[in-house]
Image 1 (cartoon, helix red, strand yellow):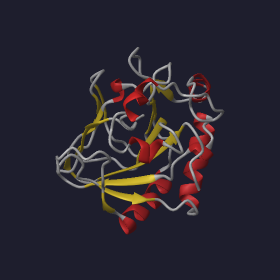
Image 2 (image 1 turned 90 degrees about the horizontal axis):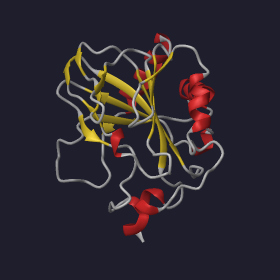
Image 3 (image 1 turned 45 degrees about the horizontal axis):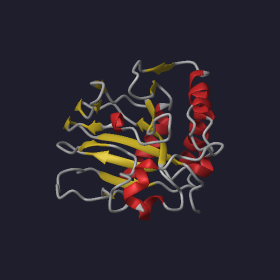
Image 4 (image 1 turned 45 degrees about the vertical axis):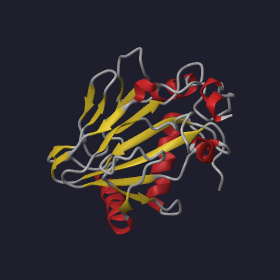
Length: 226
């Protein structure tokens, strides 16, 4: 069954992010949004999406609750992802406010959203080139996607300026985005036909000086189990 998973088309679900047109229209209706020009993937940048005070509140949450990051479908490279992760509490007012703002920007239904994660990268830490969707042929696809389905959209927000390094590089279009406090990135992990899009491959590059903090919110085809 898993061997044919790449050929399964996503069934449209309101608020899931597929098809992508309603999300694109919602994001583009907001001022200050830049759409990266590329036929290979749908990628948006919104500077100053979060204010500095809210960013600092979330950084404090990450510092208080971080643990080593993990990967699905481990590839044998112990240095593939070297950051630390914090599973953000849904009932925290700062987290709830950011969820509300993401939903208002994208039009995505929070019932399709995974719990928000925070990541902390110290000097030398990185997340090598990867995609956010689950490999339809991977060992963990059934485990992670049977109930909520595949990841549709990723929303990532930088929480601080980084002294050096820490950029995000989208390799298929050679686009490098520098971390800035409050800057949001949003991209569609799927193609128009519902299949996964390998051109979303991106690299969280090594931090050379300072510390990098980000939060990430992923959305699914179906409601996230609560």
